[in-house]
Length: 190
Image (cartoon, rainbow, N blue to C red; front, side, top):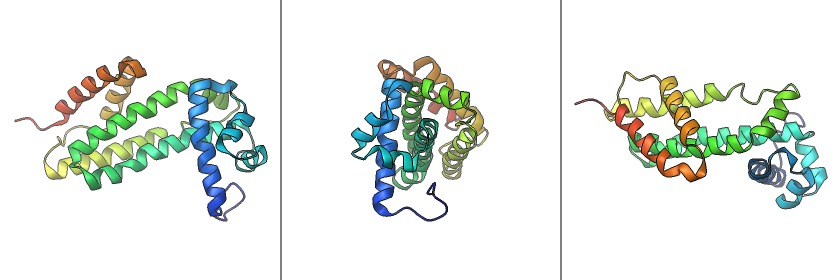
């Protein structure tokens, strides 16, 4: 939705906004809150005025970048389920979750600045993540590849724990092994 009311964005404006968010995620995750908005606009191929039209403050850009990554993660569920068996889709989504958490960790300082200014970028995160996991679990339960006695919040807590202990890019092999163990625990018992 456009920040300028309820009118939908023109196609070129939507592309500019999406490009700004893509660049901002990468910049904040890599350089932290020190990255300049001019540098983000320049890398996105737009002027600083375009950036400010979409995101009137640094905090608005940081929060939108974070929410964009959250949406990208949660929106991936339907595509995964359309192309994979539910248990394989859940396992693939877990890898995407690790990517998301790595990006979130990289953006931590920028997100803290948003919180310090009174924003709450995490307000709806848990609900969206639990809904995504519930969809994946339900599909697996329906076809008999996943247990029916596991709560989505427990899967989220388990994945979060894995990213806390093995969430650095250099720990991806360990994270994969831990996610495989989690998946083994989610399969029905013989």
